[in-house]
Image: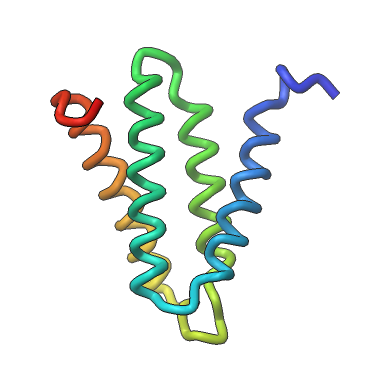
Length: 109
C-alpha cells in the first residue's frame, strides 16, 4: 500500500477512531464540550499553519475526528441526543474560528 497516495484516508480513519475513543470516556456533557472545544483550538492552529496550502485534506481529517467523536457519544449517560451532537459541532467550529483568528492577529504564535 502506497502511504503517500492514501494518507488522507488513513488519517481520516485514524482520527475517526481517536475521536470515538475520546468521547467514549466522557461521562459528563460539560467535560465533553470542553474537550471538543480544545480540539477545535488545536485544529484551528493546524488550519492557520497550512493556510497557504490546499486545506481540503486537513478539513477531511477534521471531519473524521468530529464524526468519530459524535459516533462515540455515550448513550448510557444521555449524551446521544441530537442537541448534544449539534452542540459538539458548534463548540468545535467556535474553537476552530477563535484559534484561527487569534493566530491570524498574531495574538498567539
